[in-house]
Structure formats: C-alpha cells, structure tokens
Amino acid sequence: MAEAAIKKPKFDAFTWEGVDKQGKKVKGIMEAASVAFVNATLRRQGINPVKVAKQRKAAFKFKKKITTKDIAVFTRQLATMLTSGIPIAQSFDIVGKGHENPSMQEIIMSIKHDVESGTALTQALGKHPLYFDALYCNLVQAGEQAGILDGILDKVATYKEKIEAIKGKIKSALFYPTAVIVVAFIITAVLLVFVIPQFESLFAGFGADLPAMTKMVINLSKGFQEWWWAIIGTIVGAVVFLSYSYKRSEKMQHSMDRILLKAPVIGEIVKKATIARFARTLATMFAAGVPLVEALDSVAGAAGNRVYYEGTMAIKSDVSTGMQLQASMNATGLFPNMVVQMVAIGEESGELDKMLSKVADFYEAEVDDAVAGLSSLLEPIIMAFLGIVIGGLVVAMYLPIFKLAATV
Image (cartoon, rainbow, N blue to C red; front, side):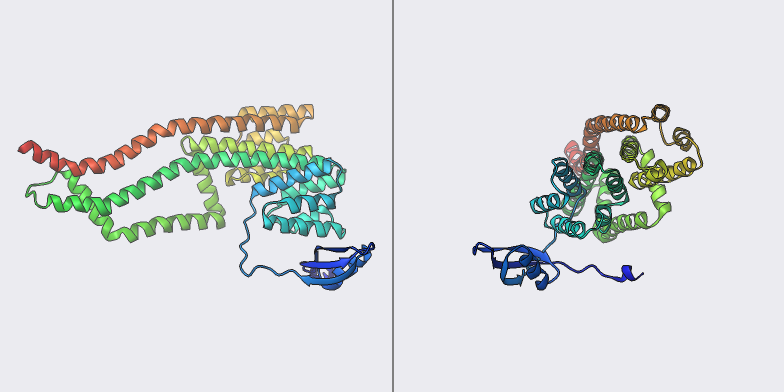
C-alpha cells in the first residue's frame, strides 16, 4: 500500500549550459525532476554546469491526438531498432525524438525514463492504458520473459498494421453511403427552404388546381420551414442518444452489433472483418507463447463487436474446462465451417498459429474484394436514389407548368 501511495516525480525539460573537461562550452536540453538532478547528472558526465533553467512552455499548446497508427509506427520502429542491436534506452531516444507527433514523443520519453530507472517495459507501457492495451502489454511481457522482445515487437507491429488496414476498409465501406445520404438531405433541405417557396408564389397566380404531387411537395416545404428545428434536433438527438447508449449499455451494444451483422451487404463485410481480426489476434498471441485461455481474454477485447466478444468469452469458458477450441467455436455458431476446420487441423498438427494466420489472410483478402464490390454496387444505387429524391422534387415543381402549357 505504501508503494502505491508514492507518486512518480514529474519530469520537466531543462535547458543547460556548461563547460566540459576540455574547457569547451556545451549546452543542451535534459528532462529531469529538478535543477539539482540536472546539475548532479552533468557533473557525473564530466560537465561543469554554468546555467540551468526550466524550459518555458508555450502559453497555448494544442496537443495532437495520438492515433492507433502512431502506435503501430512506433512499434515497427522500435522493433527495427532492437533487431539492429541498438540498446532499448537508446532505441526509445531515437524513436521518440524522430516522431512527428509531440504527444507521442512525450509518452515515448516517459517510457524511456521508466525503463532507465529499472522498470520493466511491460509495466512502463501499462502506465498508458489508453494507447497500450492489455493485449499489447501481454505480448510484450511474453517477449521479455522469453528473451525475444525484438521478434515479438515485430509480430505486434505486423498485427497492428493488419488491424489498421481492416479498420480502414470498413470505414471506407461505411463512409461512402453515409456521405451520400447526408449530401442528399442537405440538398433536399435547401430545395425545400429556398427553391420550393419561389415556385409556390409563382403557382399562386395560376388560379388552377395544382397536381397532387406538387401539393404534397409544397406542404412538405411548409412543414420543414416551420419544424426544421424539431427535425434536425430529433436527428441529432437520436445520433447522440444511440452513441451514448452504445458506449454505456452492453445490451444496446449487443443489439446494434447484431443488427449490423445482419444488414444487407455491409453485414457480411463486418462479419468477415471481425473473423479476420479474431484470427489475427489469436494467431499473434499464440505465436508469442501466451496461454490459450489467457489469450482469449485479449482476443475478446479486440473483436470490435459485442456479439463476437460474448462468443469469445463463451469459448474461453469452454476451453478452460478442457473442450477443444474448434468444438467450442463451432458451438457458438459465429464461425463458418471453413474456419472451424482450419482450427481443427491446426490443433491436430500443433500449428494453430499458422492456420489462424492463413484464416486471417483469407478473410482480409475477402474484405478487400467485398469493399471493392460494394463500391461498384453502390454507385448505380446511389445515383438512382439521388435521381428519385432530387428529381422527384424538380418534376413536382414543373408539373403545373407542363399542365398549363398543355391547356394553352
């Protein structure tokens, strides 16, 4: 308890100037807890400190967000440094100072200080759970214990890169139709608010009955102009409510993720991407020597889908009681027969990690093809959708003009 209460000293940046053993003036920047620490460190290095001052921070400093891509790049660079035989502290120094994101630099240097003070890398990474999750730390711990940290980091980097690629493809698949719907809504709103009223004032002087379609559009325009705040408020409120509920309610997560999996076209892509992520994560954990039951905990968290999270936790429960992995996967009903059979072959041959990697490769390729096919399929559908919505409004406004021209 006493150790938990001790707070880690805060490190600040200090600029210093001094004279080395040859009498040359030298200067630099050092991160330390105090001026006294800087002076002591410099003297140990044979430098006589002349001036030490705390580096001033900008009054307004906007920190750049750290993304999963930043973590993937950091992992790849660190793995390359360690494979080249560079000591870990020096590797952190090189990678940290060379990173483009100042926020990432700050975290890397903090980890470096922890490692230099004798803290295990796993524990140093664990102090930043927002960026280095349990899966990442478990893999690093396995690498440290087995003395193959460089190899494990290479596997983690490959894993991160593959997962990011899958996420990017899913986002691109969902972004296109969403963007088109938003643009269609904006164009429709502009027509209803600014264009339709101009036609309405023109039709008022006709003195004749308007077609039913035209009346419907005019009434729709009036309703939108009067209740636009309620319509937009309802849409924004629904999005915020669903987002809030999804983050805080497991039932909502399960329901929405199950609906997403059953959605036409998109659902199949999400399912394939989730299976690829499941296989890639489990293959990486198993190859690193992490016990299967322990690995399934991390796999569940990395699934990215509540339905598969619950399915993976059920598999973990079955495997912990002695059931074979392939039998438990088959019992969930979430995995295609091909995946189950590949896992069965892997268990029998003792090459489960290789078989899971092949499953991941196959489904990642399937996601690539599905996203490419989706783009080709959506283009004519979206054009037809825009034609019906926008074209319908335009035709409705010109019908009275056509009718008047026919009677002249």
